Length: 438
Image 1 (cartoon, rainbow, N blue to C red):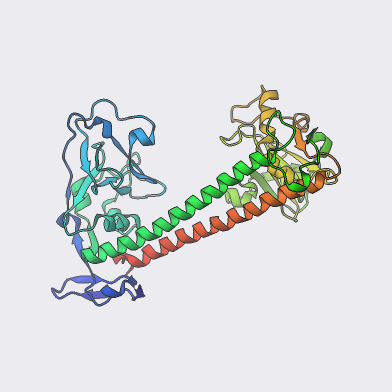
Image 2: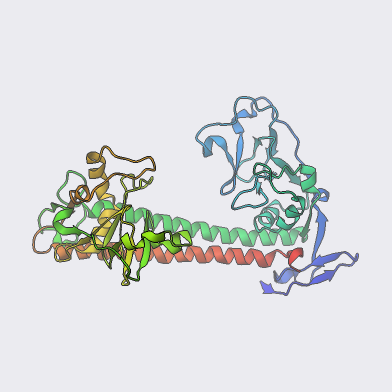
């Protein structure tokens, strides 16, 4: 590709045109993009479903596009009557004018996964004429190139979250587009970037799955006294032992008082995070002085239920500056580092080692908001499997180092995925000229 500054151009027939900032070399000397009403290059789809179409009901997902209800929900949710449903074929488009957080003016998707299907009449459906590349238009809408046009149709805001834009109103809007060969080239370019993103996402998922399986091998399973996988130097080190958390840790009771410290919260999958970062503000109010004071390698237990951690989540504080967490929500404790390596214990908690015991022993006291009534005494009774003998700390360090190196790799690959998504976003902004930004 070669970059070319976006400018307003004039075609031979004196129609105004736009040139994108980024253009393929073979098109850099061709005319700019022309403005056209969609109704001149696309038409409504009004074909109705017939007998037998009821098994191919499609739903519109902002993330996954047009998907079969039977695949997406595991069942058909449209009901038995589908005669009013609109019948689509591959490359047809569907517009849902319902506003969402991700799509302020609604969602537009192309039917690309199936040869056909039917959708609810609440959707607005249209089909491009020959001479237009459907994949280009899919990217055009995803890039947000049409949002200013849709915004011009919305004067009084959405009612019940829906703009009630008719298909004729939608097709009366204008779009800027090049000739089909350039459309195809743009679509191929963005498709290739999407393939890279998908490949990177699969790589990341594989690493996360590998880590999960590795943790299951490195820690003993319930009822077993040794892990399935052990480092060579510890294969003859004997069985692991089970100790109570109270034998290797003590409860924290010091208050923050007037000390300057970062106010924290505990979030599943994120760990200890500052209130400012999580909520965008400090939520302590006048209660800060009652918060528990914690330091590096201390732990905090959030008793709130989540899908991944139905018995609550335990996180380690990893920074050097002092911090504090609410005493009414979290149980806080500090380990005896002569007996246990904090990072090793962190991975044990991440494997939900505490969940099984708490599930079996904490049977009452769950509050309406989903927080378990777990006392410090309850928590300190949680059994912790640990290597035994003189090499206990050495084996703990080996396990922690192994999993930390894998986490570092996962972090690096996550950053690569984020960089690819950022590159794609910037690429789309340069490939599609916006009249509103001229």
